[in-house]
Amino acid sequence: MLGKHINLTWLRTFEAAARHLNFTETAAELGLTQTAVSLHIRSLESRLGNRLFHRRARHLSLTEIGQAYVPTVRQSLSDISLTTASLFGTTTSRMVTLKAPISTCALWLAPRLPKFRAVHPDIELRLVSYIWTDTTGFDDVDVELRVGRGDWKDAASEKLSDETIVPICGVGLNSGASKIQGILTGPLIHVLGQEADWGRYFAAQDIAMPPGISGYFVDTMTAAIELAATGGGYAVVMTRLVEMANATNERVSVVGGEVSIPNGYYLMRPRSKRSKRPEVLLFEDWLFKEFSDES
Image 1 (tube, rainbow, N blue to C red):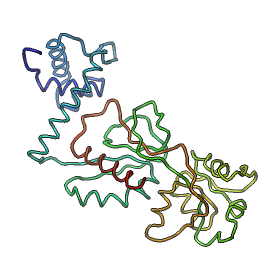
Image 2: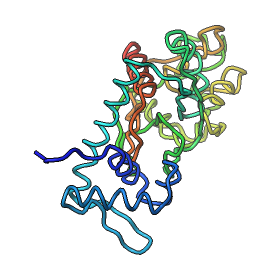
Image 3: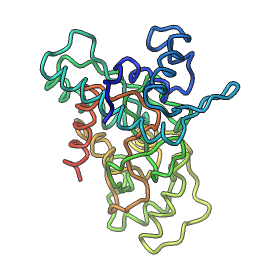
Image 4: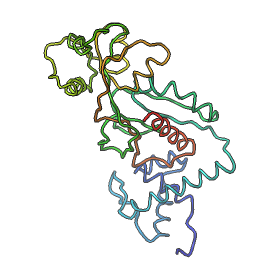
């Protein structure tokens, strides 16, 4: 064991520097000068007898031992924060910023957020939506949901769900005995980025993708549902989104069985993320439960 205790301030500075890999940004976050940040890191390295960072011109990176050390430091700081908040409460603003696809925000998350607020009225929620997956970083985002296969390179991820799609059209627009024949007349509504879903649906019916059907191309599943609801044609969209779209007013009809897709929802786990605050952990636990209850 080490003969002396390690300064907690040095560890907080090390954790922040390991996230930013930039002493100037670290100083800005902690309200310190860049000189103070450098001094903290040098003092910690001296105390440990090991270099934690490689310092090169305009480039900072963790050494192997620094990479091995930072998860334990991050977890320990998080444990201190959780225990302190649990025993003594907190007087600071508690806000969780969530980033998710726009259709998920509108059709699945928004109707559920009041349930979370009812249990945790002291936690403020900020919802940020996007159309295309942004892999430029996690600045100011506490929790991010993505839809895909979990193969992103910018961060690790944890799977929340498997997903299925169903074909839909406006209520009453396909009441024939052979719904598939109605679909084959089109028009077909395609969601940009998910164009292969129609091919998956037809393959599941042992039908070749029909050529020459007129259609539309939209950039969100929300738009696809709206277009189908108003008689624009047929769309294949995630089953969970259809259920929420019809929750208060049935606007679309499901005209075929569910078909599994390779995409699912994932909770992102950024490698350079600040220690999780208690309210963020609470929200993540709630998200897992919401997805689990629907599986």
